[in-house]
Every structure is written in structure tokens, then in C-alpha cells.
Image 1 (cartoon, rainbow, N blue to C red):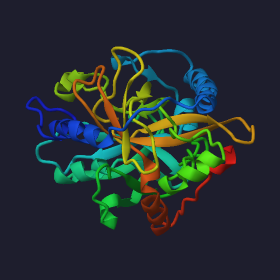
Image 2: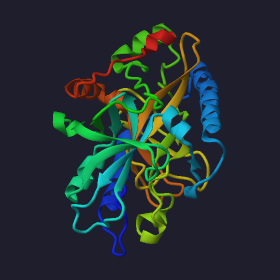
Image 3: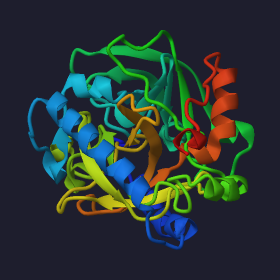
Image 4: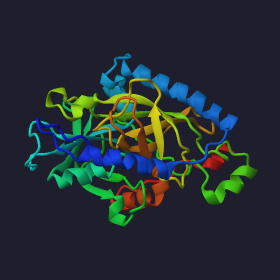
Length: 341
């Protein structure tokens, strides 16, 4: 999350996460192998259509600082993107005129998936994760919903690497314009299913999703300077960024590493919790499916041309299914890799 900078900025949040990056990268490192042609075609055609649709919804190619594409309310709604408003009035060392911000994705009418540290870090500063904002501008006149309950991986004793996930329960369903984004918890064959996937000629064998380009959304700072200079504060405006996957996406891997597709771009403080979306062709030819395959956990500094680590929700499917049941809005698997065989 992003804590609004003061003239004497708080130290620790960004630096701790930055120090975590090399450790997480080592944990995520996997042997690359040639991608399966049918899978690449499946993703390439779908991604082209999905990103073209996103660009059309944006209303134009307006560029924010760090060269992320600014998006419209329509695109925010179509991608289930939401902002997390964190009240800092109880923080004795924070600016009072701005909230801390994080990003998230709507995964059920009353559930948002984000990053666990978007709750833990503000708590250390006596901040409160207060509400979820719907709109491309968190400070505009968009709708919001109070956060009435949360469940994080720590609530279930999950302390493995990459456990940076948080489910938020909303006080009432999201605005009807906001699209629920699918969690593809069964899209890729598990370790135990690899031999079956080989026999059935699955496009996801042997490389899973391989190394596709994804679209990520966030409400974070639009420059590195904004993380330390109060006059350069620029969080709260939603933007889109293309990222290229650098380590394989597997259901048994806690996360994956990415880097920006374009030069002079990157993610920054406040983009934490934002989703990484993959556009995949429907197995029955019913168009393009939009899947949430990653939740941003950490990024390196400076923000320009940096690297990002995304948590893989599929690696924590048991947590997501149990936590959603406990919150009264049970999630259900919506896709299985066998449908593509």
C-alpha cells in the first residue's frame, strides 16, 4: 500500500518490501522450457482481443506518469478494479489530508481480493482499512462500500512464502456495472495431474501458462518521487500496465515474477493488491475469458522499469474457498484444464 509521504517521510514500508524482492525471486525461480505452440496461440489471440477491448473502454491512450495508461470508469468496471481506502486519522506520524491506498479486484459481488500487507502495514500505524471505492478516481464521486470483515492467510496459519493474500467482505454488493473477475483455480493441471495432462494433450502441459503478457491495474503513485515528496503525491488514479511474465505460472508455485512490457514504465507504492489479468479463449468458443492470475505483492525501486512479484491465487485455493465460505460468500471453481483437452 502507499502511505502519503510527509516532509520527513516514514521509512520502512517500502524498504522492507524492496529487500524482500531478491528472496522472493529466488523462491520463484524455475527452469524455463519452450512454450507449447497451441497454448501460446490460445493466449496470444485472446490477449490481443482482451487488451484491444480494454483500450476501447479507456476512451483513448492518455498516459500517466511512469507511462501507465489511464483508464475510464467503464474499464475499471469491466476489469473489476477497485481502490482500498485506508483511513490514517489515528496515525500520529502520518499526513491527515490523504488516505493510504491499495488496489484490489472484485471476485464476487461482495468480495474483493487484495494483498495481506494492505491490512497489516496500516495496522502498525494505527490506520483502518475502511472502505472500497469503485471508480477510476478514488477521490472522485464514485460509489463506495464499507469493509465489514476480512480474512487473510494469517488467520488460517498459512505462513508459507508468498502468502500475501486478503479477502474483504463488503457491506453490500458492488455497483451493478462492476464485473466479477474469475479466479481460475482449476485452469492449470496440478503436479499430480501432469501425466494425465500429457496423455490428453493439454495445451497447458508441460509449461502451464508459460510466459504470457498480462494486464495489471493499480491506484498507486505515478512516479518514484511521489513515494517521498508530498508535493508529488499522485496515488488514487487507476491505471493499466502491461507486464511480461518471467517465471512460470504454476498452481503449486506461490507466485511469479514480471517486468513491464514497455520501457520507462512500472508499478509503484499503492499498486499493491492490484490484479494481473490473463485473457484466455473459452474452451467452447464463447469468446474471451478474463482470469485473475496474480495479486501484486511487492515491486522493486525505483518504480520506473522495475520488477514485480505477483501472488498466484491458485496456489492458495484452499484458503480462498474456505475464507469465502467463512465470510458468507462462497467462491466456486469456474474452469478446469480438462475442458481444453
